[in-house]
Structure formats: C-alpha cells, structure tokens
Amino acid sequence: MWLFALPALLINICIILVPAVLTFTAAFFIWDGVGTPMWAGLANFQNMAADPVFWSALTNNFIWTAIFLTVPVCLALVMAAALLMAPKARIVVQSIIFLPRIIAVAVTGRIFQGMIFSPATGIVAWLNEHGFSISDPLADPDRSLYAVAAVDIWHWWGFLAVVFLSAMRQISVDQIEAARLDGAGFFALFRYVLIPGIRPTLTLMLILTVIWSFQVFEFIFIVTRGGPAYGSEVLATFAYRHAFFEGDVGQAAAAACVMSLFGLCATAVYLWLQITDDAQST
Amino acid sequence: MIGDRWSRTFALGLIGVASFSSLLPIVLAVMNALKTTVEIGSNPLALPTQLHWENFSSAWRNAQLGPSLLHSAEIAILTIVMVCVTATPCAYVLARQKGKFWRFITFYFMATITVPVQLYLYPLYFIFAKLGLVNSIPAVALIYTAMFSPFAIFLLRTYALAIPVALEEAAQVDGAKPWQTFFYVILPMMRPGLLTVAIIVGLNAWNEFVIAVTFLQNDSNVTAIVRFYNLTGQYSTDWGEMLAAAVTIVLPIVVIFVLLQRQFIDGMTSGAVKS
Image (cartoon, rainbow over all chains, first blue to last red):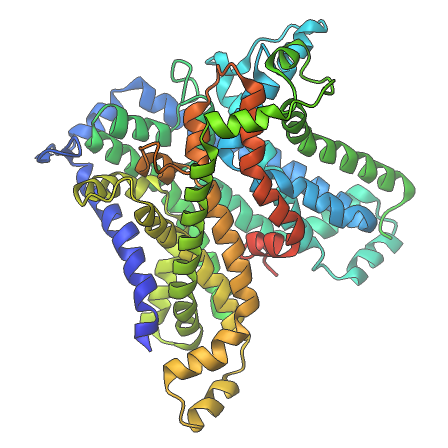
C-alpha cells in the first residue's frame, strides 16, 4: 500500500524538502550559487542586521500583515452578510467578485499600472485633468507599498467574501430567524449570530493571512520591484534581489530563514488546528 | 428573507458598489484594448469610437503570443497529468491507513502547503542549473507538481473518505489485488474530485509567475505570462497592444470559469471553509 504514496512523496521531498534544508544550510555560507560555498558562520545574519533595507523590508511585512488582517477581512465579512440577505443576486455577484482571483497576478499588476495609477493613461491622469491633483503613488517611496496593497486587496477580498459566505450559509436558518424575531437588526445579527457562527473559518483565514503576508512577493515584484528607493521592499523581494541580481545566495537564504521564522509561528497554529480538525473527521 | 427593509437597501447598495469595483479594471482593460494609444492617453474612461481589432493581431505578432500560449498549455497539461497520477493513489492511502507513520506523512503534506517558495527556490534553481534543467518545460511542470499536489491530495482525500470501505472489501473478497481495487473501484468514484483538481491545478500552472520567470529565460520557451511580463513595464508606451495581449492571455481562463464556476469556486475555497 505504501507504494501508492511514494511518487507524490518523492517529488515533494526532492523539490521542496531537500532544497529547504539546503536553504537553512546556505544561510551560514558565503555562496554565489555557482562556486564553492565558504563557511561564514553568522556573517550573513550580521550583515543583514546592519542593513537598513532589511529592517524597512521587515517593517513593510508587518505593515502588510496589519493591512491584510483588517481591510479585506472587514470588506469580505460585510459583503458576505449582504449577499446572505440578497439570495437572488447571490450567484451572479459571487462570480463577479471572485473573478479578480483567477486573473494572473502579472496581468492584474500591469492593468493597475496602466489603467489606474499611470499619470499618463490611468484614472490618476483622468482625475488630474478634472481638478484633483494626485501624483502617481507608485513613484512615491512613501505610498508605493500601500498602492501595491490596494491591487492585492482588489485581487483577494472577493475570494475571501465567497469563503465567508459559504461558511455563513452553514449557519442554521432557524438561528437567524430566531434572532430576527427577537428584533435583531443587521448589525446585531452580524455581531451576535453571523460572526460567531463562522468563527472557525474566520480564525483559519486570519492565520493563513499572517502566513501569506510574510511570503508576499508577486504583486510587489511585478508592480514596483520593491521600489522606488526600497519603499515597498519586503523580505521576499529582498531575498530574490540578493540571490539573482547581486549573486549573494547566502544572504538570500538568511533572509528566507527570517521570513520562514515569522511564518512558522502562524504555521504551527495552522497545523494544530488542521490536525485536531482532521482527527475529528476521520 | 433576512433583514428589514433598511438593511436590505444597504446590502443592495453595497453589492452594487462591490460588483462595480471588481469589474472596473477588467472593463477598462477590455475597452482600452480596442483603442489606439493616443485615444487611451486622451481619455482612458471614454468608450472606443472605433474598434481597433488590429491591436490584437499586432500583439499576437509582436509579442509572439502563439508559441508562448502553447508553452503555457503544455506546462498546464503536463502538470495536471502528473498531479492527478501521483496525488490520487496518495490521497487514497492517506484516507485508508491509520497509525503514527501515516499521520506524520499527512502532517508533512499539510506543512508543505504553507511553505514559502522562497524557502526552496534558491538551492533548487542552482541545482537545476547544474543539472541543465533550467529552460526546460518538463522541469517547470515537475516543480509545479510538487507545489500543487498537497492541495490535490487533501481535496481528493475527502472524496476517498466518502467511499464506503465495504466496496473495497467486496472487491478483495472477489480476489482483486490492491491496484485492481484502486483502478476499478476507487478511481471511478473519485472522478468529480479529479475534474476539480484538474481545473484548479491548470489555472495555477497557467497563471504562475515566480517559478516561470526564474526557470524559463529563453524567449523560445517562456510561458505567456512571462512573455507578457518581459514585454511590458510600468513605462510601456503601446498600452493598446499591451492590453490586447493581456485580454488574450486571460480570456481562456475566463471562458472556462464562466462554464465551470462551481468547480472553480468549490475547489478554490475547499479547505478554507470550516464547519
């Protein structure tokens, strides 16, 4: 029987586990990826700690986590409750808000650059012509991170709303009816019935948000490459730049380790939840 | 019907605003894909006065979309086949076997779902470079198989758990070997799950960026996404053509999404919704 699991396990170990272990090792070496690695002890970590870009990248990861734990989650919760009250619109609207999630990140990034943020061809240009003076947020080191976050929120929040809606639809109708007969309005219903009713799903999504926020790479790399002036740099773009543009794989590996360390705490909680859930279902 | 009139009005207003903002960038992209660059510059929000379909033909020609779309399709199909072939038997075993060892394997696959690409990307790239596997389409499909199969395993496992054990026992009593039981009893019952897995894995492989941009560097073997990324930048000049290329790359996905919405939504939200 165990032969059945072997191919999947083997591929996973070769592609993910072995290189992941090598990353931990490489963090303690000076290595350009091609030549012979040289033992470096903690030098990679010390260099990183002395690099202000590393600290701003780490801060940006925390800002990103804070944004994604609040903005898309709130939007999605309210939207899911609204869709619960509008059964006729539900199916069509659910597909519409889900749509951004299936469009390739590279395409979404470029569409936002050209059609929304561009001071020549975007909504920003149109607003400038109509008396609102707005500069391109992607060109501003202080605002670029938030501009990219806005793109990712557009891509993400509808999916989250659909997840919350599926969870809310599992709440028994009797419970909702009973609350309504007791005179609960929208916000009371939301606060005392819907949110507690989907708590397990909500908790899981919040944990996954923390895990993903420390891994965020694609949107930032595509839209700003961590710039301008490292304004939107995060740990993942920091690591990628060191590995492939500066030939310093040891430094990249050290950054990847720090990244994983933050994700690891959230991952531990995630695994614990999944395992206890799994033990109940099997 | 839930909620009083006031909250229903609020809900409908919210639904309207939300749908509008989800669709706006997509509509802008499609609309401007049919305009000249001069028209886009003068007013991105205006409807096209004349439909410039030639943006699509020149994007197709200049961006060499044809071959790169073919590469994307090759990678997607290869990945779907490899994930289905390796994940289905694995999911079946994980659904049936109990005990410490199998619990550990289950735990291991769960852990790899949350591992960041960055944790294995760098050594993997330099190992593949040494083995001459950079710029190889099957090599990229192999990496995708490792990345996407844990998701497939857990989705298929829920299907396997729903199959009554009595069916297998009956087959065994009739003298069927384990692989025969798997092929003739289990596999047919997992078919709906396999369709969902194929759709989600295909979508992920088609859209994937980090691995594709790192491992495919020759114009002769890049995927459509990488081709599009390489050709465009923040300061692109020919937005009409660029948007036409974007629409061409996204269109197949959107068509499949419209046709198979349930599989898309169920597949992508599976594991996220807890009861």
